[in-house]
Image (cartoon, rainbow over all chains, first blue to last red):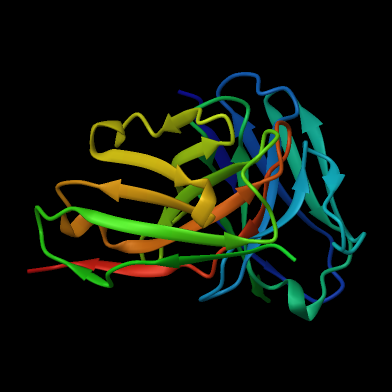
Length: 107
Length: 119
């Protein structure tokens, strides 16, 4: 099974900061990676799929890059609504795997 | 407008079988569309459980495969997940989610239902 290592687990940042989260796969998953945002008590929300494709309606300050085993998720200018937990998701092949999550906190 | 909603018991006893139903609208299980189940223990990460596709292809988490069954009722717009031999470690919020097709992530999610396993 493919393992996903997401880092950091927690990130403290201020409004306006650039934020970067990394996911590393234990073997190549091509570009079959998604990123989700989850707020407390809510279901996850799809932000990015196919590593870099922005889901419809998602603000352009969110972006994703990478392929193979190294992936990056970036928020270019953190907004108050962006404080949440973010998960990467490998859907290259069964079994699917989620990263352990990155909580973005207010600094 | 695509919506999904999970339903089922909120409390089950250890060793019992859990049956969860995902009732959806705004799409049909056709042409590569899939419905997945994901769970999240309190304060922990997401865990993928299973997915079923329009052609009845099914995939399961290897660690839970012996305990899970996923089925679909296309006429009722429902997907059902059963999990046998429930244990307190299975306490979690269970979500169902829509997959548009090959190459896509999970683009629509239900609100989730919290299932507690306790005697």
